[in-house]
Image (cartoon, rainbow, N blue to C red; front, side, top):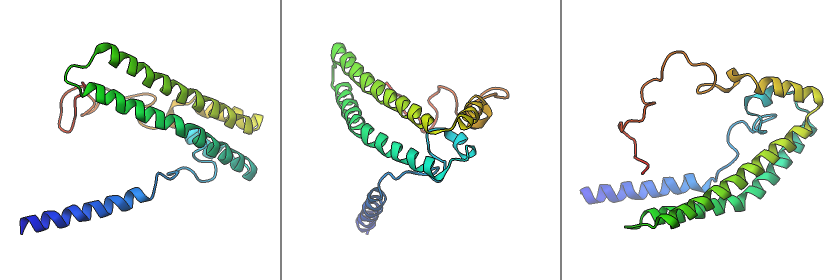
Length: 169
Protein backbone atom coordinates (compact mmCIF):
# COMPACT_ATOMS: atom_id res chain seq x y z
CA UNK A 1 0.00 0.00 0.00
CA UNK A 2 2.83 2.38 0.90
CA UNK A 3 4.55 1.69 -2.41
CA UNK A 4 1.33 2.49 -4.26
CA UNK A 5 0.94 5.84 -2.48
CA UNK A 6 4.56 6.77 -3.11
CA UNK A 7 4.23 5.82 -6.79
CA UNK A 8 1.07 7.91 -7.19
CA UNK A 9 2.67 10.89 -5.45
CA UNK A 10 5.78 10.53 -7.62
CA UNK A 11 3.74 10.51 -10.80
CA UNK A 12 1.68 13.48 -9.62
CA UNK A 13 4.89 15.39 -8.87
CA UNK A 14 6.31 14.63 -12.31
CA UNK A 15 3.10 15.70 -14.06
CA UNK A 16 2.75 18.97 -12.15
CA UNK A 17 6.42 19.87 -12.48
CA UNK A 18 6.23 19.14 -16.20
CA UNK A 19 3.27 21.48 -16.55
CA UNK A 20 5.07 24.20 -14.64
CA UNK A 21 8.18 23.90 -16.79
CA UNK A 22 6.18 23.78 -20.01
CA UNK A 23 5.04 27.35 -19.47
CA UNK A 24 8.56 28.69 -19.95
CA UNK A 25 10.18 31.66 -18.29
CA UNK A 26 7.87 34.39 -19.55
CA UNK A 27 8.49 38.03 -18.93
CA UNK A 28 7.16 38.12 -15.40
CA UNK A 29 5.58 41.01 -13.55
CA UNK A 30 6.39 44.56 -14.48
CA UNK A 31 6.26 44.10 -18.23
CA UNK A 32 3.14 46.23 -18.63
CA UNK A 33 3.24 49.77 -19.98
CA UNK A 34 6.47 51.31 -18.79
CA UNK A 35 7.35 48.43 -16.50
CA UNK A 36 10.29 46.10 -16.86
CA UNK A 37 12.18 48.52 -19.06
CA UNK A 38 15.43 48.35 -17.13
CA UNK A 39 14.71 51.32 -14.90
CA UNK A 40 13.27 49.46 -11.92
CA UNK A 41 10.44 51.15 -10.06
CA UNK A 42 11.15 54.46 -11.80
CA UNK A 43 9.76 53.35 -15.18
CA UNK A 44 6.13 53.69 -14.11
CA UNK A 45 6.56 57.43 -13.41
CA UNK A 46 8.11 58.35 -16.77
CA UNK A 47 4.81 58.63 -18.68
CA UNK A 48 6.19 56.78 -21.68
CA UNK A 49 4.37 57.11 -24.97
CA UNK A 50 3.12 54.06 -26.86
CA UNK A 51 5.93 54.55 -29.38
CA UNK A 52 8.56 54.66 -26.63
CA UNK A 53 7.17 51.52 -25.02
CA UNK A 54 7.18 49.71 -28.39
CA UNK A 55 10.75 50.80 -29.11
CA UNK A 56 11.89 49.73 -25.64
CA UNK A 57 10.16 46.37 -25.97
CA UNK A 58 11.88 45.84 -29.33
CA UNK A 59 15.23 46.71 -27.75
CA UNK A 60 14.51 44.34 -24.89
CA UNK A 61 13.60 41.50 -27.27
CA UNK A 62 16.85 42.04 -29.17
CA UNK A 63 18.74 42.19 -25.86
CA UNK A 64 17.27 38.84 -24.74
CA UNK A 65 18.27 37.29 -28.07
CA UNK A 66 21.82 38.66 -27.73
CA UNK A 67 22.10 37.40 -24.16
CA UNK A 68 20.86 33.86 -24.87
CA UNK A 69 24.11 32.37 -26.19
CA UNK A 70 26.10 33.99 -23.39
CA UNK A 71 23.69 32.65 -20.76
CA UNK A 72 24.08 29.17 -22.22
CA UNK A 73 27.86 29.58 -22.21
CA UNK A 74 27.77 30.71 -18.56
CA UNK A 75 25.57 27.76 -17.64
CA UNK A 76 28.02 25.36 -19.32
CA UNK A 77 31.08 26.96 -17.67
CA UNK A 78 29.38 26.78 -14.25
CA UNK A 79 28.57 23.09 -14.83
CA UNK A 80 32.20 22.46 -15.76
CA UNK A 81 33.34 24.28 -12.63
CA UNK A 82 30.97 22.23 -10.46
CA UNK A 83 32.29 19.02 -11.99
CA UNK A 84 35.84 20.10 -11.19
CA UNK A 85 34.85 20.76 -7.59
CA UNK A 86 33.18 17.32 -7.45
CA UNK A 87 36.48 15.57 -8.16
CA UNK A 88 38.21 13.88 -5.26
CA UNK A 89 41.40 15.95 -5.57
CA UNK A 90 40.73 18.88 -7.92
CA UNK A 91 43.74 20.70 -9.27
CA UNK A 92 43.94 24.28 -8.09
CA UNK A 93 45.12 25.49 -11.50
CA UNK A 94 42.13 23.90 -13.26
CA UNK A 95 39.71 25.45 -10.76
CA UNK A 96 41.26 28.89 -11.02
CA UNK A 97 41.28 28.80 -14.83
CA UNK A 98 37.66 27.63 -15.01
CA UNK A 99 36.62 30.32 -12.52
CA UNK A 100 38.33 32.90 -14.75
CA UNK A 101 36.31 31.63 -17.70
CA UNK A 102 33.10 31.94 -15.68
CA UNK A 103 34.01 35.48 -14.66
CA UNK A 104 34.82 36.47 -18.25
CA UNK A 105 31.38 35.36 -19.42
CA UNK A 106 29.74 37.19 -16.51
CA UNK A 107 31.64 40.34 -17.48
CA UNK A 108 30.41 39.98 -21.07
CA UNK A 109 26.83 39.64 -19.81
CA UNK A 110 27.19 42.72 -17.59
CA UNK A 111 28.67 44.71 -20.47
CA UNK A 112 25.72 43.81 -22.70
CA UNK A 113 23.29 44.73 -19.91
CA UNK A 114 24.96 48.13 -19.48
CA UNK A 115 24.84 48.77 -23.23
CA UNK A 116 21.17 47.81 -23.23
CA UNK A 117 20.32 50.25 -20.43
CA UNK A 118 22.16 53.01 -22.25
CA UNK A 119 20.18 52.25 -25.43
CA UNK A 120 16.96 52.41 -23.43
CA UNK A 121 17.90 55.84 -22.06
CA UNK A 122 18.33 57.15 -25.60
CA UNK A 123 14.62 56.51 -26.18
CA UNK A 124 13.69 58.95 -23.39
CA UNK A 125 13.11 62.67 -23.84
CA UNK A 126 15.44 65.05 -21.96
CA UNK A 127 12.66 65.67 -19.40
CA UNK A 128 12.17 61.92 -18.87
CA UNK A 129 15.92 61.47 -18.48
CA UNK A 130 16.00 64.15 -15.79
CA UNK A 131 13.06 62.51 -14.04
CA UNK A 132 14.74 59.11 -14.26
CA UNK A 133 17.99 60.47 -12.85
CA UNK A 134 16.13 61.99 -9.93
CA UNK A 135 14.26 58.76 -9.24
CA UNK A 136 17.35 56.52 -9.51
CA UNK A 137 19.34 58.71 -7.15
CA UNK A 138 16.72 58.28 -4.39
CA UNK A 139 17.48 55.08 -2.39
CA UNK A 140 13.94 55.00 -0.98
CA UNK A 141 12.67 53.90 -4.41
CA UNK A 142 14.25 50.49 -4.15
CA UNK A 143 12.48 48.85 -1.20
CA UNK A 144 13.99 46.74 1.57
CA UNK A 145 17.68 46.18 1.42
CA UNK A 146 18.47 49.62 0.07
CA UNK A 147 18.71 52.95 1.78
CA UNK A 148 18.64 53.64 5.50
CA UNK A 149 18.34 50.85 7.98
CA UNK A 150 17.06 51.33 11.45
CA UNK A 151 19.12 49.30 13.87
CA UNK A 152 20.84 46.02 13.19
CA UNK A 153 20.03 43.09 11.01
CA UNK A 154 17.04 40.92 11.75
CA UNK A 155 16.98 37.17 12.26
CA UNK A 156 18.44 35.03 9.53
CA UNK A 157 20.80 37.64 8.16
CA UNK A 158 23.92 36.30 9.84
CA UNK A 159 26.58 33.99 8.53
CA UNK A 160 25.65 31.03 10.70
CA UNK A 161 24.67 27.52 9.80
CA UNK A 162 21.01 27.98 10.61
CA UNK A 163 18.20 25.74 9.39
CA UNK A 164 17.85 25.49 5.66
CA UNK A 165 21.31 26.78 4.87
CA UNK A 166 23.84 25.03 2.73
CA UNK A 167 27.56 25.72 3.07
CA UNK A 168 29.14 27.04 -0.12
CA UNK A 169 32.52 25.39 0.15
